[in-house]
Length: 202
Image 1 (tube, rainbow, N blue to C red):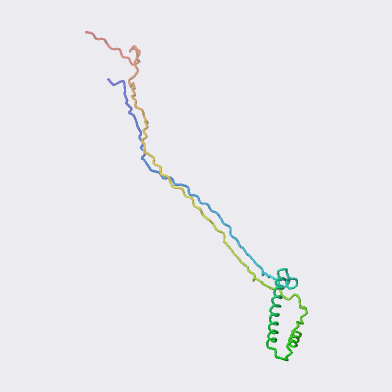
Image 2 (image 1 turned 90 degrees about the horizontal axis):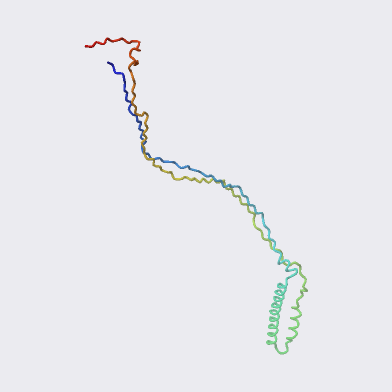
């Protein structure tokens, strides 16, 4: 007699995935900043400079109070020198006079002959202006543009990623029971293929 039931066992199915530990390095972003310093052309020109000093010229025409006092003092000083020399010369004549010599006549003649005939006529201004000048100058300066590069680089970063194990069940365990026999009729005489049997009893 053949078996009427088929029993099938389905084992569990497990999928395992292993991720190894790793060390990752993340690069930092580098930035560059560019600045520009503008140059240019600079020209500096200084023309000839003429300096005319007319202070002495004006002072000779109309002297200042200070200059007038100075000129009067100089004239007084000169007059003192001249009077001293005259008195010394006349005194010498008187000391060396001889009997019967006309010393006073000599002194009078000397004074008459030495009379200053200058009546104060002079050309004005008596002093010429002073001229001073400086040579012209020209300075040319050219400066090129400048580019400044500023690099900014940040430090990188290391990151440790630990390992892990992933376990997934792709098939659960199972038991399948199947009936593989033919149909069962009750009563047995309902079976189309039923063949009655003879009951043999002793």
